[in-house]
Image (cartoon, rainbow, N blue to C red; front, side, top):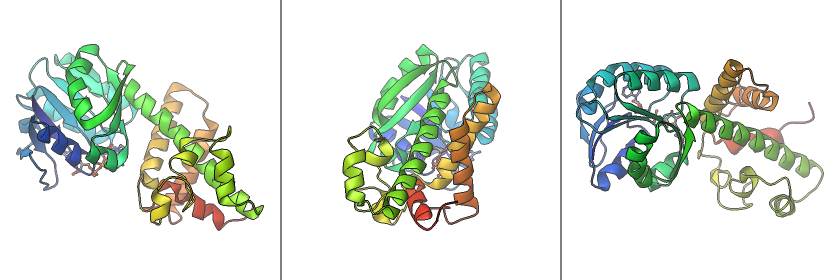
Length: 290
Ligand code: NAD
């Protein structure tokens, strides 16, 4: 398949490399001067998109996605698939899909979970919104770049699934960290706390798979001085998208809002920037009742 790939950063680079390694012809474009194994670089986004059966975008935010879409949609062949894998606001995802459909294209929003490690290893999970035809065409590409693709319904639903998931993740990580800090002060051994909670009703991915306490549970960023992993800045981005969507949809999400405020404080006023999102635990260790 001929594939255009726009946005070859930390995530897009390895995703494009995996497609090329699997034998697809990948034409890439990035604003920055980047080189990716097996990918032929084009002069512009439109040049990368022209003649491609699928064009994948992996960009920082909805505003950039909208401007790239304006440039590349007119260059794409009718019947081609516009496949956005960035994490963006639901409104931008739906607006871009509408523009693509009006131009005779298929449109999918397919944000991912799994991070840079998942992009490199081809083990991402895709949450996909958009039409069935586009999903069927893109399915073999999802199988190369990831291990699972869930079709969540019409355009925008992939982004909706992503922000709902990450709102749960942000809130459970915070409360898991709070609980470890409380357990410390109560004299409860961390390993004992893990052994109980990981097999009890308080368990979650934040505890069992990505434990924020160093030396406890499977290896995680806490064992590597909280190098990300999944950076607190990216968690903040996703929590803000969730709040933006909640406002638009008139949904009451008080814990999601509290999680967003706490990550904003951690990243913008404390030492959270550039650290893993599980570094909330050392943050709570330093603090008393407030
Ligand atoms: P990144 O900043 O490393 O990559 C983005 C790339 O887009 C950069 O190379 C940049 O030069 C390029 N770019 C920006 N504007 C452009 C334009 N107008 N035209 C062409 N290229 C342009 O970011 P990333 O970590 O690869 O993340 C990409 C997306 O994936 C984001 O939406 C992010 O939220 C999402 N995501 C990231 C992770 C992660 O762990 N990094 C995990 C899940 C989802």
